[in-house]
Image (cartoon, rainbow, N blue to C red; front, side, top):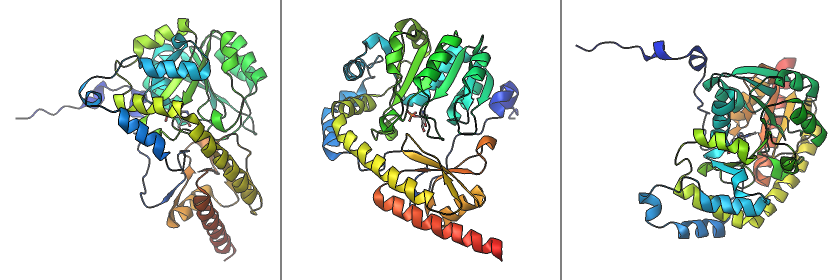
Length: 362
Ligand SMILES: Cc1ncc(COP(=O)(O)O)c(C=O)c1O
């Protein structure tokens, strides 16, 4: 006779409240929802990666400390290897930060922002304190410093996802000086714009910078992120890190991407150019309010309900980002695609807005 067993009785309430991360996929659609690089991965870089893969890459565990990759990052960014940690996407590094400094502590998050900070903070059983950005999505520094008093971790995204704006050095310095805890600055989109906070690492022992190869460097599928911090802070994170967090294939690919980063600079310039065109086109559309952006996406609000615009675009086989966050009600985010994809998006958006306008007037 089988005995019934409810595993849920063992699960914390904050875990029960989470929704599994399972974004909708529409393989045939124009995909402008996840801030990926829309261009073809440079074939010469792809070929170099494949050439480095020998049989041992499959049979043996990877280098737990990703030594070669760390050396390359160290050379690229002018940092010592002991200031660097690599992760299975910056998502993994965010989780490790929460588990190391957040569990049993308060975690301060400037919102609205990237949802994984809140999700991983809950997984880590941290007490979450959200400090709302102002109406232009700018940081409210005084409130962050106040909330950061006695906290375990403060998290700032700059440039911010999804608003696209960046923190200034002055704002960050005030937060670093006002908070006696690690201050994480997620610079996932820095290649597209915004202020580089790396120079502050020499002065501030509590600064942690997150970077990723998922956005400008077209490597979202292989999950490679990295983190810069002072060695005294990093040593705690290394205690929490999964032993072989970055597989052989990802380590090899990341190495080649960084060695060939010029190939990606060209793509970033094209994306920036396309962003400016898309920004102007959205500005010219009646009923749309679009926000300036230091990233590879644009946040916009429409007079029509965002849900209906989102659903209308899906009918046109265009996938953008809609939000469940109450602070982002009425907003949508579109990733900058290829020139062709951006044209399709604009055409579809015009059609959807016209149709919704006609319905309203009926
Ligand atoms: C601000 C921000 N940080 C981190 C990530 C996750 O990056 P990764 O692919 O390196 O896990 C994202 C992905 O959308 C992001 O927007």
